[in-house]
Amino acid sequence: MFKRASVVCPSCLIRFKERADQCPNCQFDAQRAVEQFPFQPPVMQRWMDNAKVFDQAARQEVDQIIDRIIKQFPQVSLFICTVELDDPISLSEFGFWMMNACRLEEGQSEEQRAWSILLLIDVKRKLLSLTPGYAIEAFMDDADWQEALKMMIPDMIADDYRLSLRGFVKDASQLLRKSAQEVMQTLKENHKKQKNLK
Amino acid sequence: MKMSWKYRPWLNAVAVCFLLVTSMQAQEEAFDVDDSIIPQRPPSHIFDPAKWLSPDEEDSIQLQLAKQYKEHEIDIYIVTRAKQPVQGAKTYARSLGEAWSRAPVWCVIFYVPGDPSGFHVQAGGLGLDPARVNRAVSEASRRARREMTEKDRVMAAWGECAEVLRFMHNARDLSNEAVVEKRNELRGEWISKEKWKRIIMVSGVGLLILLAAAAYFFFSSTRKKRCPAVYHFPDTAWRKRYQAPYSGGSGVVANCRRKKRTR
Image (cartoon, rainbow over all chains, first blue to last red; front, side):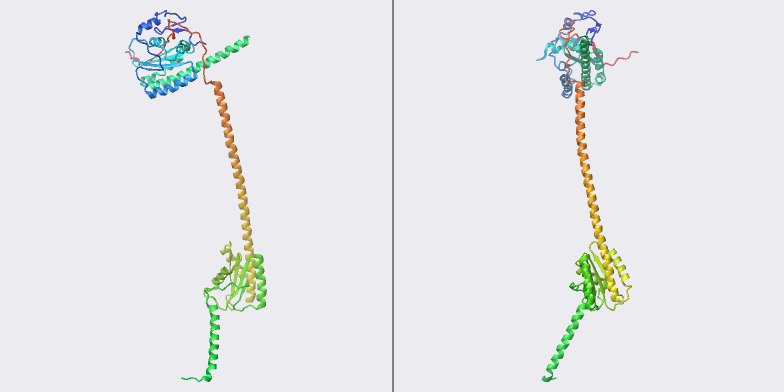
């Protein structure tokens, strides 16, 4: 059922079969991330547009799509964060730090944080990164989501962030639906198998 | 000059006679000359100021013309005059016919005794084509003129004219009836067509609504089956790592920067 068989280190991006408290390759862990980003972590909100690339109209447009996603997948939350970081900060490390260090939004539970997906857009370096929580990552195929990020690239190059984000959110909706349907199918099959065994 | 009183009665008598004669002549002349006045319709079908017909002839003709009038609604008049009217025989006869007619079809046979051109016939009627009537009447007159004497010709003329006019009158009635019948038939057809059109339209609209409703229910039910409104992922054991509470990060990254070409 799990999409992700291996785990990835957000720092060195090397895949491992076993989960560990530290990356066996680069010894990356939460502690190191905190040391790396000694800032006051913000409250995690849907819009964290630090680079100010989305106007009100763009937000409203994307909000409508995200609301539909949340209506269909009540467990899932989607967060969008734009930053202007300098080299050599790794965006995946920054995403890891944000997902774990950011304070919970008013009314948000730890469980909900684990069902969250954070999209990071580095406007300065034109980089994109996606960080899921522990709960949702079980149903996400990295290759599919990588593809979704790649689809954003042409509009990003053209500096059309609104179009780029709208496309991504739509793709996210499709990917979640695809995953959910696969899960439902697997559950049905398992149920049948159990019946047959009985 | 002084006149003796003894001749006075004689003179009075002569004057009275002169006045009587002149007034009678004037009256007669006035009747014949003043053509602008159309005389009143006579009580019978014969108006004979020329005194051309005998009382017996008049009675016999009147009987037959009255029959035509009653049974066939054809008002025929035989008119004679001592002199030709100023406006011409045909115009005069037509004026009389139009003024006197009481029936849908009328006919006037006008004759001036001694007129070498003989009698003149004018006819007309409601709903009849004047050109057709004139042609028919001329034909009838032509046949009547084959008789030997003028009286016989006039007698034959009204008989022939009555026949053709009766025919035309009946034909018109028949054609009117046929037209009405045809119209009713067409109307009936039209009504039944309209009725069918309405039935088809109403049933078509009903069928469309039913089909649309069926399609809607079919698609909405299949859609519901295919994709439920709300998806719930099952709970799984979190694969906690790197001592992080909510997320282990990921390697899903993309670079939008154009790669610099190296020579």
